[in-house]
Length: 594
Image: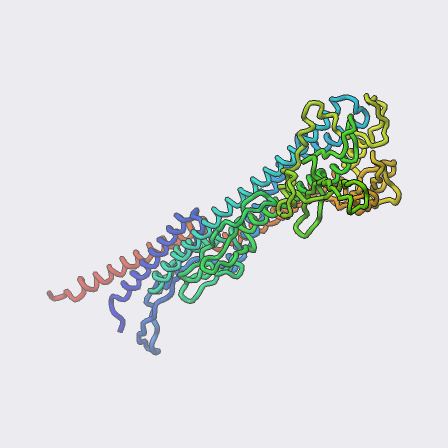
């Protein structure tokens, strides 16, 4: 037989269930703007019924409601998609920022960029061919050469600064990543303790998932949960978090990279020492931007190498106003710079000519008196012309080439402008050159900036002041020679051998090389912009998807509030009604005859 007070217990359960549901609605509303919060709901279930006899047999009489759990609304698949796409979004965002900085460095719209400097330098040689007798024209050529070298060097320093800034950002981000994984491990421990009693640590889980979302900005991660509710996190094969243990990433200083003039750093895994290579996210973008900036330094180095090798060769073939000959325009006067292409981006090889006079005994030559033989040796040297056999000294790369790109100081001395080699041997010249004199070397140097490399044409050569043959590259359609081939001689000066000179910029013209470099920059920057826009659309869809699952809807919560409020009131009224019935039963029944 059912107890008289069973109805009261049923209503009490109803009041408690509705009160808990109202509390949960209030928790949702107050956390509607909390980052990473997941909407919670009370999971209710009917209690076990009580059996009571009837004329047709036993009947099951309901005894009310009980709270089974408080659950959070979360879609694991949506979380995985969100974290994967977040890594991609942050990658493009970081790359986009770097491209914006590179474009600012190479901005030619204000007339102060490299392209403008190249054009002015080229024009100064063209003007010099037309009127080289005026000192101001030669001075203009020297000054424009200095502006060009300064502009290239300034752009290089800015790229170096970006590389250094990227390494500094990388150090900060590695520390931040380690801090995030430490917090996740701490939350793993708290969740395990709290859930040992069977409860679900919803708010702690939200905090942990929010940290996982933040971690996915830095690297691509895979999150898995074990049977006790603890997370394990793997990134590109490295287990960063394993339940209540973790591996830190170390940011260690590497060696100095002389090719780019920066200190390099590496990311390694704690305890193992292996190099960590992120596959996505901000860390990968930082490493990729560093390589991207290095590529543009290589491009500027190739331009500088062209000026130090190809243009200097053309300038050495010419003559100044007082028959100065064999002088470099850029770099050290006594060094021959030759570009050599290799698997590491190419380098300039530096050589100097050393003349040695040897006295030979008459006994060896069967003559009546001793003789002297003067021999010229080509010796590798360092930046200052000192002979050396050390490849690290006579081979310069990257930033080293750019730093060596300086107009030689001799041209800034008194009457130094007269040494600019504007004419070739055989051009009309007097003690005082007139405007009608031919200055073909100036036009040949000017043509270097707009002409592409051609094959050598047999028997196409000029003759220098000593009568030696100087072989030239094939002429253009207007009959202009625009690149002199390097040649070697034996000690007697009788044999000449020509070989194809490798140009640092390849077969394209100097102008076109820079234009193609900037075109590549524009195309890559635009491609990243497009990918970023597409990725933002993807993220918008994912955010909407996750919000529909875990977000707090005010209309829904207010509706639930009214529902549970009414339920609470109805249960209270029912409890009052039952209380009145029992009061009548207990206090007013069986009083007849007292």
